[in-house]
Image (tube, rainbow, N blue to C red; front, side):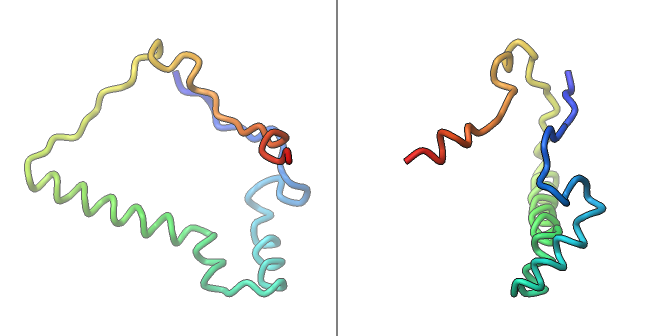
Length: 92
C-alpha cells in the first residue's frame, strides 16, 4: 500500500515549488550566502546520493545482493503516520 505524500498546510507564499525562487531571493536579502542557498536547494541531497551510490557499487563489487523485500503491511499498521505535536514541543 503506497500512501500519497500530501501537505495539508503550507506557509503563506510557499504553496508549491514554483514559489521557491521567491524564498531563495528572500533568504539572500536576509544575508544567506549563495552556497548555502544551493545546499538548501538540493546540493546536500545530491552529495548524499553520490555517497550512497558509491557504497552500492562497492557492495555490488563484493557480491552483496540488494535486499528487495517489502515490509508486510501488518507489520506497519499503526506505525505509518508520522507527525510532530508542535504544541507539545513548544510547551514550557
